[in-house]
Amino acid sequence: MPNEEEYEEGLQNLESNDYTVDYIITHTAPRDVAAALGYGEMSDDEVELRKYFQRIAEEADFKAWYFGHFHEDDEVEEVFRALFDDVIRIA
Image (cartoon, rainbow, N blue to C red):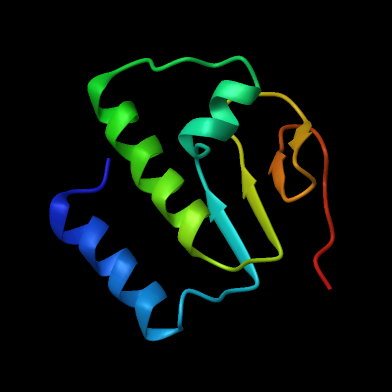
């Protein structure tokens, strides 16, 4: 799990790029995306991390967000993609 310094570094990196990136790749999903897939909060650490990702999801401009963690292939809102068996090509 990231520590406070790492959370802050991530936000600073996004800010230095005007919160605009092509792709975001993380282990887990933002809070609302995880909830849409049927996964509630699991641990305090995970709650904090998903809230952090939710903030980024709301503030950043990105083409797609890829994550694993749930061991399934699924899509939410056409930009959030859970990957498990699927292999994708990013051009």
